[in-house]
Length: 538
Image (cartoon, rainbow, N blue to C red; front, side, top):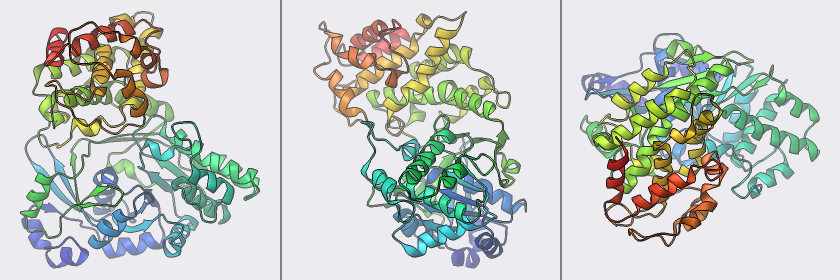
């Protein structure tokens, strides 16, 4: 059997006999309707989109709620479309890995067209312009990672491609968002048609990040006389162009070899993964957990597909903010980062395996329930305690989720301020809570410093996960060795005072001394990390 429309048609009963849930809608009819009257285009054709948004759309196509599918666009790594989407007629397999030992297998066909966001390719780019001229288009959504919205680099400077686009205008931009804004300009020229630009990336106030980038391009193009001032007014008019906030939550690790072998055993050919020239790991299938949340601010100038019938929650901005803070600052992300940091040091390869360690399990429970939950604002639509219960008892311990601490440890310097700093600030602002009572969050900070040494608890070197600040953070721990000899920890002060990393100045608020004490004990020798955790995690 092959994963193509032809293979699906010719081998439908074999797929069903092997336990696959198949699309029940008329694919040809939906494809034709989508191309004629597109409603939803998504930028970022990666795993979370294929496992979440595309599957929600499929369910709604199956039950007749929707009549159009999704157009997927990729602007970072064109090979995802060329080597994975198109050879399989845009079909994909979703392997939902459930905590009850079962795997639900679904062939997802809701992506009916895939397009490459390349301004040098006239055919691809003209098709995108055609889509953006369509009055029917309601939303452009994005999963391009938080870094995708950056218009300044780590030094606060404008990267060369973006600077070049500021000067050349919307004709043939080269930067990712430059091309997106040029498509918005196409929509503006087509009659100032309304649209919602919906970031679905896992970052705080994601809609504002996208809006800021769009405004920057528009303003520069106006300033340089490349477009009229009316375009800048268009993208700032919320009745025409909106940038809703959203909160997304679904764990979608990279395609796992065990899952590939399981699917291959069903007799499906051509499931080999591809590593692109940009080092993107893609496969005809995605593996993901069952749990999923997507909460979106209900601000759509041209309406939106009835995604609420598929479990997606539309609400007001204030509620989205509460849900996002609940998840990112307390109920999930801090627990993940804790396990990532200590998992790397202790040699774990799976997050789920860490939850079998009673000390690590207790550590994340304290951070979630005891240190974080007291400052969570209940968003009303999701109960925070029930959310943590689900995270600690079902989601993270799921033995079928091949998620690694090494993956989650990526960009930790960019995560600490939100995932822990906001809790510290809430304690400082509270009339009844005292930040000096926080003991486990400082232990995570100290663990991260210990992690930056790139030496595990057995004394072996390991590779740090990618992080834009490694070049400035790792020198702060250079020279420290695994020894119980007295250490001059003044080298850490420059790092511990950085509000951009920790959210607060740890020296200023009096938390640095505890972090240093923990760091001293974590570096006392071989096995010191495990011993220190056992000592303080009660």
